[in-house]
Amino acid sequence: MTNKRKGQLPDIKDIPFQAQIMLREAEQYQNGSKLLSEEIFEDTGNSSNMLSLTALEISLKALYLVEKKQKYPNNSHSFYNLFKSLNGKTQNVLLKHANEIAANEFNQTFNFINALREFQKNFTDARYGYEANWHLSSGQIFQKTRASTKPSELKEQSSPDFKFFPSEREIFYRATKITLIEKLTRTLPDPTNT
Image 1 (cartoon, one colour):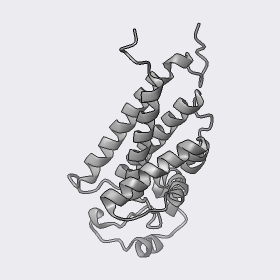
Image 2 (cartoon, rainbow, N blue to C red; image 1 turned 45 degrees about the vertical axis):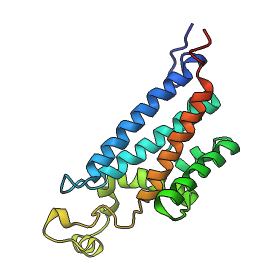
Image 3 (cartoon, one colour; image 1 turned 120 degrees about the vertical axis):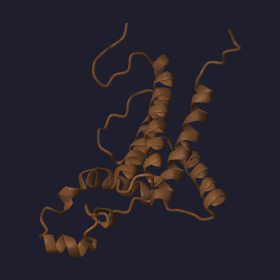
């Protein structure tokens, strides 16, 4: 018998399947982010960043689901708290994968913990960035954003103070995906053992 109450999963044996669905959805958000960031569109604002952050959040929650056998209980968008709720071994594996990708493909190191802390601010505040400047006059907004008359030349009108950490976000998403696939591979039954 399955429990259909909100927030509860039907059955523990379905967790790997649910995590795969979440990973597929995260990949769709990530693909949408890449599409928007390829400069095919003139002005996408924070859309690409928000899609990529959504992909990262879903993949981290899928990893939590596989590890803890339950849905992440908090509806906040604290990427750092979500990461810290994973067991220490998983955190280390995830950071190891992220650091390997950073070294091999970017030839540098990143502070992923700092980026995770910033992602929450970015996700919650930049999502409705126009609200960030309601307290400013039009002159202050103009000065703050160094605005021009062309909408495509506005410099992050919502708030130029947001740092989206695009490299860290991309790397950490990929590291989360790798770690999740590794965990799922160990969780799924072997189809040859029938």
